Amino acid sequence: MWHTGRTTVSAMTAVQRLASIRFAQRTTRLAVFLIAITGSAAMTGERQEPRTPASLPSVAAEPAAARPPWGRIVMVGASATAGFTETEPLGGPTTPQYHLSRYLDAALAVPHEPVRNFGDRLFFVQPETVGRYQIEQALKARPTLVVGVDFLFWFCYGDGPAEKDRLQRFEKALNLLEAVPCPLVVGDIPDATGAADTLLSADQIPRIETMSAANRRLREWAASRPRVVIVSLSGFMRTVMANQALTVRGYTLPEGKTRLLLQSDKLHPSPRGCSVLALAILDAFQSTRPAGSADQIRWDPKEVFRLGFNASAGPSNNSSKQRAAPVPAGK
Image 1 (cartoon, rainbow, N blue to C red):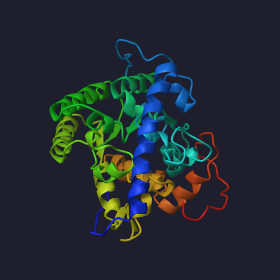
Image 2: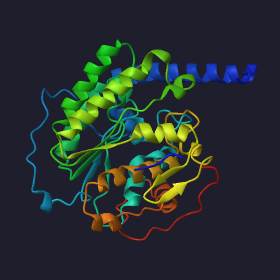
Image 3: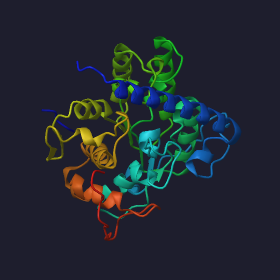
Image 4: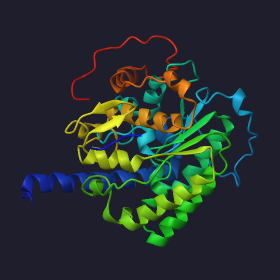
């Protein structure tokens, strides 16, 4: 999918880090309070139903030939999918530029329904409840392809549990994904310890051994399920944090130029990172498809970024030409 080729901290840096941690803690407390009184739907701006059904709905799978995979894509997951920027933690006017679905839409060169995005920036507060709800909504949409690049993240990361409990919670996430009857692209567990000085607290981060165990279990689970494709979110994070060269489908971002694919919080993709991540998702899925279908995707990350960044606030199927506005420098 892709290939990878002590300084003394000033008082100001220490203050900045402390401020970032306190900001994240305040945001978490606020999120918990808001969910308690309004539900997560209030944060996403979407109308959502109560999240209390006892079981997932049963959806009969249609013949694969009758349902091209690009026809109705549904995304599930956390803040990387939903779109997040630290300057607008609960959403704002520039947040849509970080919606991963916009770049997935932009990458598809064939007519398709607008990609539906059920991602939730507050997934971390109640991962089991929010995860179940998202799968329920995805199944109701009768998707041709489900994408959950960060769906599993908070089933391994998060507050409180012992390491063995993290793996048990991870197993619950796999059980939720069992209900998906169509092709499914899911991301593995990345090493996000670099975000410990920004958005993540130390007790939210699993041990490296736990991350490895979760990823082994994911590969084992996917091996017996031909419809499941794993995209290496861990490889993306590792390469970008090291600022190494990264190649997707013959397009290479050189060494020293990939760190800008992650925001300064060392956790969430930047808009340019969203365009590359969208192509990595499609590349992983395309590896399971006939070679002749590769021309259905725009593989140039610059073009995908241009179209996705300048997309209208509403979803677009990108089946017609889009007029691009100038892209602000540094995005």
